[in-house]
Length: 182
Image 1 (cartoon, helix red, strand yellow):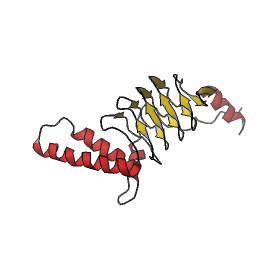
Image 2 (image 1 turned 180 degrees about the vertical axis):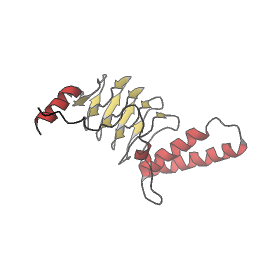
Image 3 (image 1 turned 60 degrees about the vertical axis):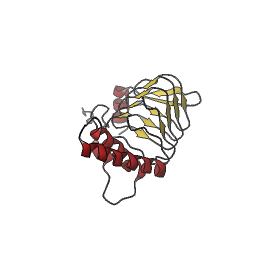
Image 4 (image 1 turned 180 degrees about the horizontal axis):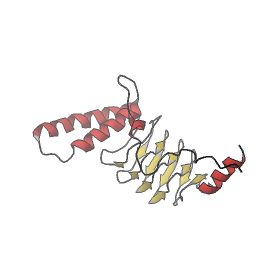
């Protein structure tokens, strides 16, 4: 009897992969540069030291520069966990009270309007709009140009206007099917 293969490696929804945010020296990457300026501001925020307050102003200027270059509107106070990827940050708009979980992926023209919660490893396609107090579950995928107005459960794919769950993936079923087709 053949034993099933080990579970394929999945991107974690709990542990941030900081290497996804790493910016190589002297490379042009507006998304990672914008994210680096947000992270720098959040590290410096709250300190009363004079030099730190001056550095914070420099970081705010840097954030404004990269926001203009990237064409993105991501407030400095947004709660963003580690591992966020924005390959094409053009037109990304995020509400200040939205929370983005670890290892998420946002493509161009994504809008998070209202208090949105993206749990871990959520992939959002180009042009998708997430409106209102909505929670997107772990390992969920939102299709391009979808308009999400209700909660999306974990391990599911949603698409359309308004977005509906078009596929719910059961992890054990996915493992069994991948084993059978080998």
